[in-house]
Image (cartoon, rainbow over all chains, first blue to last red; front, side, top):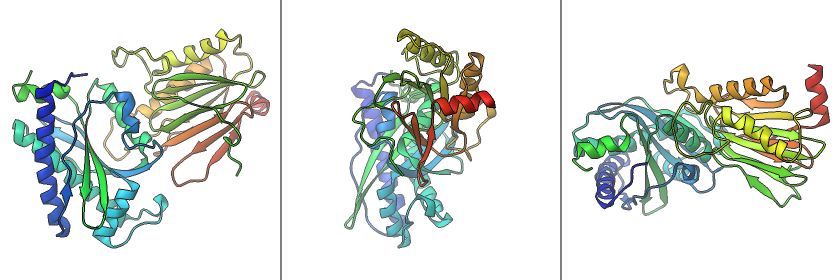
Length: 201
Length: 182
């Protein structure tokens, strides 16, 4: 695992901040409402802790994963805990599914779209800082217990000796608060390639 | 449906790449198996269960430093048998259960070589077959995550999938008889 000194933490924090700005703009354009999103925390976690990112490992989370191609390809995912997805559905559609078995296309496509916008916001932030050209492929929707999703991503990461970037976002709105996670698993060169592009060693 | 965990106070949660043994009383559990495979061996005579949370089919795939016995199919199966041998249990009457090995991100274009769930299941099955341990319960593949809870005293194995009814298997003499007859 890459050791994150202060400078490297700052780099990730800066990506978090720029991504945040992009995300707020994109979300506000989507529903015409205002969002306040908390400044993301940057921390380094062991892969074995990844399945517990959402707390209860059997907590249902929904989101979308997509392949990223270009100068620093990999897998990007944006995930919402079920309760947060419910808040989003209410906000955007005025209705919510009763449970995981009632996920009609209107719900899955809405989450895929929002997750895609959020992943895009962060990838744009990475592009802005590094000059990397990154393309997001069409997203795949997923709804399952959080540990199953996160451990599957962890295995992918292990397979290529990769690191994973995880940024937690809390969305504060006048009516309800919700949270989501941006996850990025770079394919080649891991985080070192990002730091090298920025002249950080 | 009766909960396999009711009345049992001790639960051993087996995390990514770990392997744990429980004897006489208690629950062995793997939570949120995606592409990983919960590999359980059970000796009904001594009410002993040993469970590994297998992540990858073969230790040659990546060169990592941690030495978790349960992480790879090719190290987990011998370690499961050794853990039982260490407490004097031979493989003669063991039965096995395999749970997991799903592909959650199915629609993402994945080359066959990267379909880890199916490869994990194949490798564990092959290794168990080679040592003659029958697999009496299997819930593998598909695209949904699973949790497993196993009560070593009763031999009841509960499999949980989001949005579905719990499924319960019974491991023990009946399972052995069925496997021998098949």
